[in-house]
Amino acid sequence: MFNKKIVESLGKSSMIRAMFEEGARLRKLYGDDKVFDFSLGNPEVEPPVEVLDSLKKYVNSEEQGLHKYMNNAGFPDVRQKVADYLNKKSGIDMTSEHIVMVCGAAAGLNVTLKALLNPGEEVMVLAPFFVEYGTYIDHAGGNTVIVNTMKDSFQIDVDAVEKAITNKTKAIIINSPNNPTGVIYSRESLEQLNKVIEKKEAELGISIFVISDEPYVSLVYDGIEVPSTLSIFKKSISINSFSKSLALPGERIGYIAASSRIPDVETLISAMVTLNRTLGFVNAPSLFQKVIADNLEVAVNTENYKKKRDILYNHLTKIGFKCIKPDGAFYLFVKAPIEDDIAFCGTAAKYNLLLVPGSGFRGPGYVRIAYCADIGMIERSLEAFTKLAKEYGLS
Ligand code: PLP
Image 1: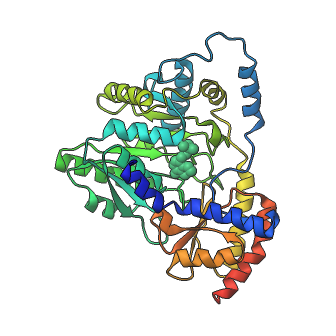
Image 2 (image 1 turned 180 degrees about the vertical axis):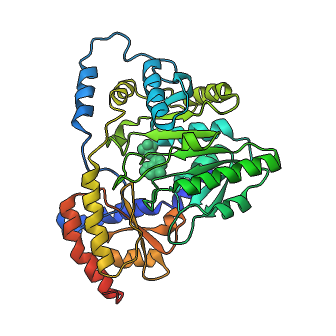
Image 3 (image 1 turned 90 degrees about the vertical axis):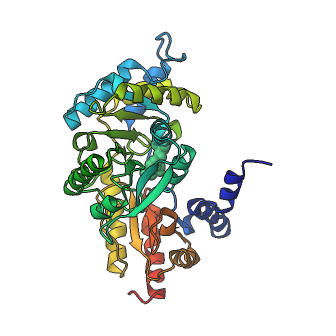
């Protein structure tokens, strides 16, 4: 009776959601402070005070027209501020005409994919990856092509990407800092990727767009560089959101920046603006467009996240778990001591530890720990991790 494809997919229900429900069950049984929930990438911190002050200013503003329908791309002054900010970072030359304000990265990705894809065209994603990419690509009529990153380092396997490019390849989605690994793709690997893309475009007579999904771009530790994808890739589309950097996931605010170096970028932008409307988003929320324009240089305190990363990383590696030290985002991607990551998460749940199987991100054999959680909970969880390690003879 209903949409068959969607109803079938409900049966396979996301592993993150399953963990979330398990968390609710365990909390009821054992009490809140005895359950260690690392399942969700939902920032526990409040937005920075500058952001809240800005919001109050606009809520109290008597400016006329602030709450009306607008150009579906967003307020021109906000878009210009975003363009100026990105030009400063990337050294390219964009104007408000290259920016579309959207309801978070999820909307930005849907709008972008729908604007680019003809039926059956391929979009490459690098595993492990944010698994909703597959659904978005499917909604836009494309086919997902999964290419693994390098074993253990999770850096881009440029040779594997080259082999996977066909005359149907339309785009590649990259996400750095990465969910679920926390890895930042190196400048070297991005430059090599660019060379491969340009070589294959010439060889096959196609255009390949690089969609850079960047919600974690401000959550970086130890001064590590996140290379600007707008400066490296000619046909780059950068998608950003303030869900993580300003802890505003419920407010649904972000932007798409389509590089001024894309041939006929005006048509692409017009398609995106139309799709923003016809996919039902219409435009990004007005007040939050204004708020983020005042706060483009602001981010939540990353020292907090770094402290949490260090507590967990140091403890887990000390008790025998293997894990790459993440340079950004707020996830640890830990190697499961057995092949079956789903079974391992089941065992972890016995100690009230809620982890998400890597299989849910097409990264089997690993588990994701989202440490955007209360520091007290993180500290209380260490003993449970030690017991879990002992069960597998690690320490
Ligand atoms: N992309 C990645 C890699 C994410 O991790 C998320 C959310 O967790 C999103 C996109 C969606 O973010 P938004 O809240 O901006 O739609």
